[in-house]
Length: 212
Image (cartoon, rainbow, N blue to C red; front, side):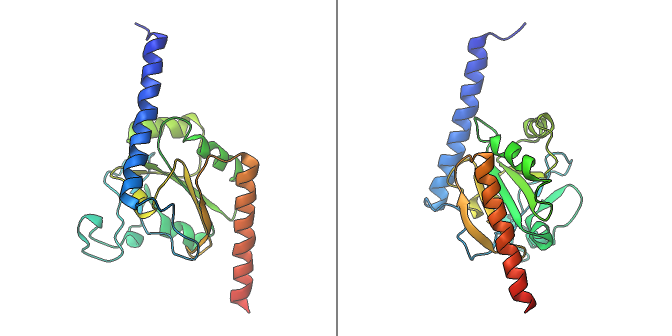
């Protein structure tokens, strides 16, 4: 039997409410501070990829034997089907979106995907906050995403990134140092393109300084 329009609306409203509750919870945990501040390192994490089969919660450990954060440092977790932010920033500048799979929040994924080929030196990636594999996998496939999307099932990575809004987009130079303040709104494609271009310019400038 097909669902009535009313039932569909209720389902959509439930997604929006659930996403809002996740953000409110994270805001409470981070004290209202939005994102990692410029000049600081991206917080390390390793999470399962949505399109993979690896299970588990986010590893956010900075050293071994760190209890619930992880038994080994997150940067050392390097294997297929795992999204490791350390590996990303070792290879180039990083644009990282943290999002909730609900409402308009996932729109940022399409905007980022549209820029992948325009900025080949940039590592684009996203993490679904408290995301479940099946719905996030459908989202990735339905939008034709090639950028890696990870699952932060327990919100551990989002907590380290001081998530304040949905989406939150962080910009970091090669090496992992945050280049500018986090983007806390769903941007237009032109606005996002400008921010990524600024990131690339800043990263190149830093590399020239290092070569002197």
